[in-house]
Amino acid sequence: MARRGTKVAMPFVLDASITACWYFQDENDPRADAALGLLADDRAIVPLHWWFEVGNIMLSGERRRRASEQYTKGFINRLERYPIDFAPLPDRAAVLVLARNHRLTFYDAAYIELARREKVWLASLDDALNAAARAEGIPLLDA
Image (tube, rainbow, N blue to C red; front, side, top):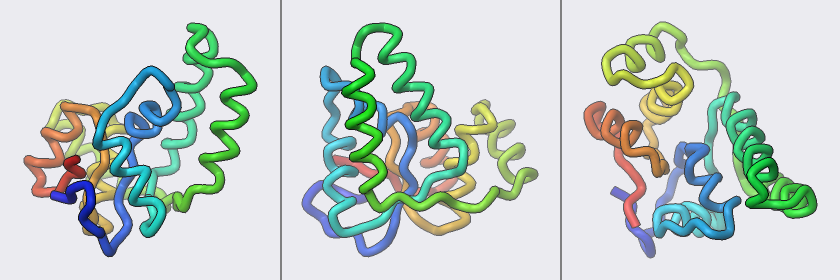
């Protein structure tokens, strides 16, 4: 497991739940802080749908009056400066198997498939996703 203060010499898979924690000013988690800190030296990898998940999180935040349009615009500008790479499409059959075996959504299973394919660790705040990653032998960010 990667720990805060430990230099990780490889990219990591970034889940939308970590990004949501960065977005919402009233949410804090040491794992989200650690992931953000790692972006100073490392790159994150995300599946293609990550951007749509993050966009929906921001839109929901505005609709619930947890954030303003101006705040969202600034957050998007910050996100675009982070070293986040979009991965190519996953092996759909492998994602389906992971989703079935761990009772995950297809899009959550795509994070596990990506971490396994790239042989990197996962940064997520999602308990079910983390449990499935552990079961698959994928290392997790731990603050």
